[in-house]
Image (cartoon, rainbow, N blue to C red):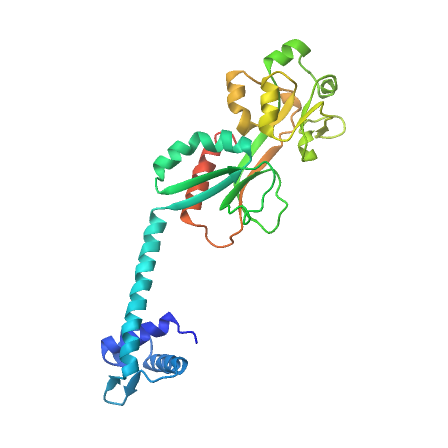
Length: 298
């Protein structure tokens, strides 16, 4: 037996208004439709709620019991809707965010203080993984992923994109010289990723195309480790601008072969499993971080 909230509303309205015709006028429906609704309700319950004649209506004992419970249920539903409305107007609750370590450190953490001041009722939980995770298994509301998406089961929102640049420290260049053309990289120590291999195809134009496949002399599993190695003068690296813009601005890293750069930009997406409207706390975070990313994304 499944009783619908609309039938409860009809039942209560008929009692409050004193007649089916008056309730129909109040609800903007026809008397016949309300009469059918009451009949369906009684059929589902297997009992008579109202003794009806052409002149009067009278609640049965079961009807009085059901009326009391119906008012309670409808009141609770109204309270729940009001609470949800307030919740939507003032985002609150726990928000679990997952991102690669480099993105978390350079594109999220610097703005957390401002976000918390703006949304004090959102409880943040920040987790890092440099490999793709199962959102449901890790109990993650939203994950930030860098690069092309391949998982069709996910729903994604684009947050922008970030240029890839070839970089080295002034110390490394002082010891080993500055490459002037793409082929010169073969004479240098190149820093690359253990996986995925696609990150070792740098966006550099040459005679055979616009991607230069490197053979790294030193590999690491995370962009943050490669950044640290480049800052320490261990070699030349290709990293996204969102994690190196401060290093470039301060002179700790220098951009190389800018004229040969093909202009490829890594897409940045927020991914989640829901295909319905996102909770407001998630929407607020994504709007906030997208605005911040605009400073160093295309």
